[in-house]
Length: 305
Image (cartoon, rainbow, N blue to C red; front, side, top):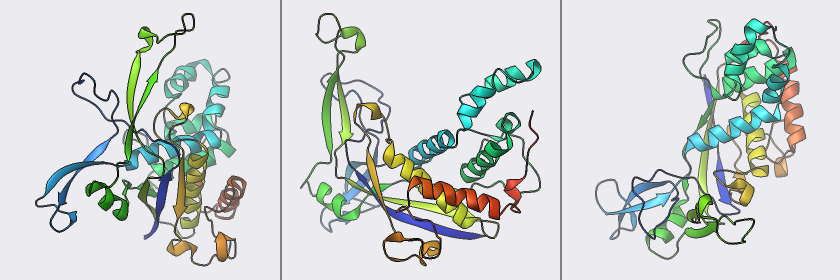
């Protein structure tokens, strides 16, 4: 097995809200706080300490949030859920209930029997890239371990130091309300005024992804899949309230070991995928890889119904 690292910087372009649970509501407090982790700040040595120091909190982006959002975007981009919905009224009656139970869930091996051959390839790519629950039926002739690894994104070191030295704050409180369409006043049934905490625009997080290569030639394919997901995320949003302007982010990805053959600006000198490519180019690259490496074990065909 080979393991490749894709790292870089995520920058918030608009306010970001990835929420956390709250055990008790404080009067006049934040209704919807952002997710934070505890760090210990050694004031004397001006560094993070794991042994002693002042307890502080800082926002971070869980790897699970990145993984879940990117997987969802890719599933829709490849038309998998649309294909399942279109199939709903066409399957045999004895299989209809099973399909209805699967609709809306992440794509898994159980979905393959309801997809045509072209969609099956994309579904299998998603399954191997992101994994599936342990309860799914497995083939015994292939390695099922997820190819993609998503790690928590932490605030960049320079920015963290400024925050912990109380030079800047990277969160803000945004007040929103629901308006009664008749009276034009705050609608109490809609929750009245809501105090939402969010990370301000311009905050930088270190992102780090891993790509496992078990079969010769598949590494670039899964790197391209990851980059396509990042590209789609830039066009969509991360976290909550995205249709109200939250969650726009931008990635600046460093070259991995797999990408060192590229020309200046990420051009396709040796045909290696880059975030500088368009969505269309990344999609075409993935399609070409699926054709050129059809001998890879995970490209096996499943029976359609």
